[in-house]
Every structure is written in structure tokens, then in C-alpha cells.
Image 1 (cartoon, rainbow, N blue to C red):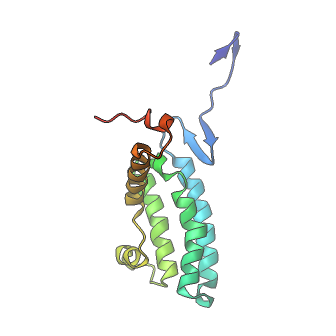
Image 2: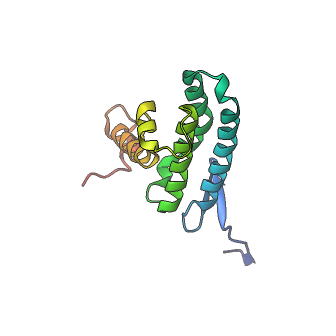
Image 3: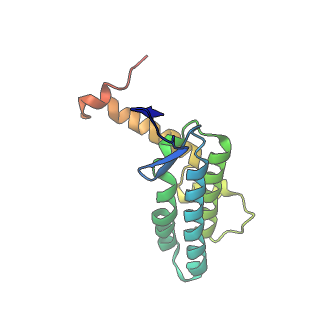
Length: 150
């Protein structure tokens, strides 16, 4: 990019509101950063899990792990499957820790027991809620102008 004859470097990535965006929108670095953070907190919860009641362990997992997973997750709609599956594995790991299930146990019944939507369904749900809220009459008009019904 050039401004007034001066060549400026073009960034390969940038961080906006805590989300690392790359040129091809693969979100690889963002997923890696989220995975690192979630794994750190998962290990901390696993370390003290035997001292906690299930409700408290659920609250810790939701506030420390799931909040990081679900922050700006609507941006991941259409992201590569590998990125989504990495984040789903983190969610499954959190469910196993909370319910003290073996590491090889199937995660779907655990997610159902905790009333947690699988990660890829959570993305779709969040987009659906945002779309509904934009079309609802109580939303500001400037938001509904950006969505066109077909």
C-alpha cells in the first residue's frame, strides 16, 4: 500500500476487539490463542475439581472457558472445519472436567446433561438470535437497515 509515495507495510494479521484476523480469514492464530487460554484454565479447574461441587465447577467452566470460546464466535461462521473442531474439542474437554468423566468418554451426552449447545450449533444460534433482534421493532433503525430480507 502506498500513501503519498511512501510504501507502507501491509499487515498479515490484525487484532480487533481481541479477535486475530488474518488475510484469508482462517482464524488459525485466533483459535490457537483461544485454545491456549482455555487449556490453561481447564488444567487449573482439573487440578482442583475434586474439591468442588458440580454446580461450582460448572460456573467456573462457564466463566473461564466457555466465555472465551463464545466471545465473538459469530465471526467464525463459515470458518474452516478444523478451526471449529478445535474449539469443539475444548468445549468437550470442559464438559468432561466438570462432570469428572473419563477422557475417552463420548462428549455429546455430557453436553446434553450440562445443557450446553455444541460449539458449531452455538454459532448458528447466536447468528439467529442476532438476526431476530435486528428485525424486532425494538432494535435501532440503523441496525435493521443493514439486513435485507429476500
